[in-house]
Image 1 (cartoon, rainbow, N blue to C red):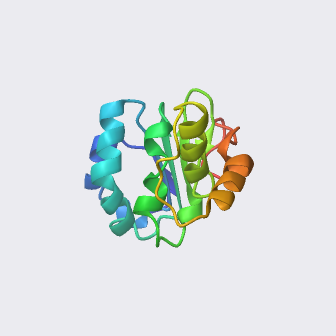
Image 2: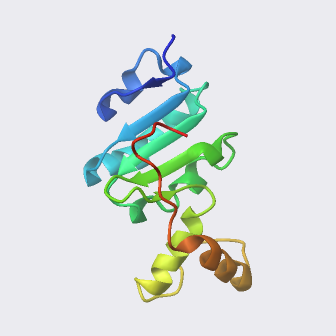
Length: 147
């Protein structure tokens, strides 16, 4: 296949005949029902059935629902650092570095509670990560393709 990037309807991603050769994938959802399907059902498919995948961008409207998805699903994936969950309205994104600290930051600053994320970090390490990566989030240039 000569294409590096394809864009298909999210519901057809698992049936794509070229998926074994796709290197860069952008999935656009924007709907909570599709986000849920992505998080619960496609995680395994993306990892196992896309062996050439080098980068993954998921465009959504709600980052909070995705905060632990990268860590939970792609813990041993060699290109985990090339996964981004991007808010389509603001361009802000989560990645393997900031998703956990953002979850903690949100819990403590917006949710008014102790962080709920399970981690091996000490309290001091967790606070430092929140200061460095929790907020503000980096912003992707949505006019460009996958980076």
